[in-house]
Length: 271
Image (cartoon, rainbow, N blue to C red):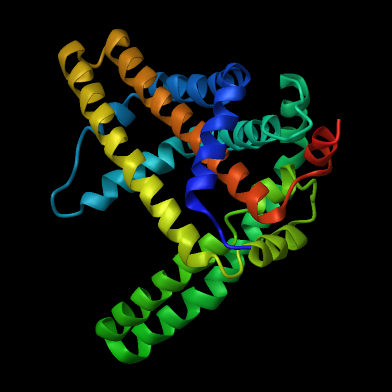
């Protein structure tokens, strides 16, 4: 089946519109509120590290993430549950919020396992050649092989982009099978999917930059006090929530188009 961008976008907006209240609840709980809390717990996120050594600018960044790594880890886990729960809401069987959250919790461990398998595989397949090239051929060879590895990385990420809907909508909790099925479903449509994701990403980034600039102005005017952090954190959480709902809707629409209708959708057709 050839992927149809227009159809995918129309189905995305239709699904989000039909489920906007329930999606807003889960996005608010798992995306918006955690980002707001993180802005209050880690105020440096709004203003950046206080002191930066011009001779070693990465040192401050490394220290920042080392000091606050636990908070970012917890945020990633909470948002993963939220994303999987949002996907569950877009299943044709139309679950309740409670059922969707339960699905998100049940799917979390297999989903993390799939990500770990993917990272390990990519590290071996791409990381080792780059390291060998840099070691034997010098920096120039490392850069060239690194660029080729980046192209392969983008290709692989497109191919495995349907792992989460395969697990949630396809009810397949086997990490390896989910990765394999995502690869199979995207066969023959990789370039179309890449173009679709790229156009979507550009649009979201432009909007996010505008909102981030507005957020920065508010924080600058209000200062590093509670009011400034609340405004900055609220806008940051809003961006993250909107992005999460949008990307989940896109992945669900793409998956349903390439995988075909679920039994629930077929059943509705003949009711």
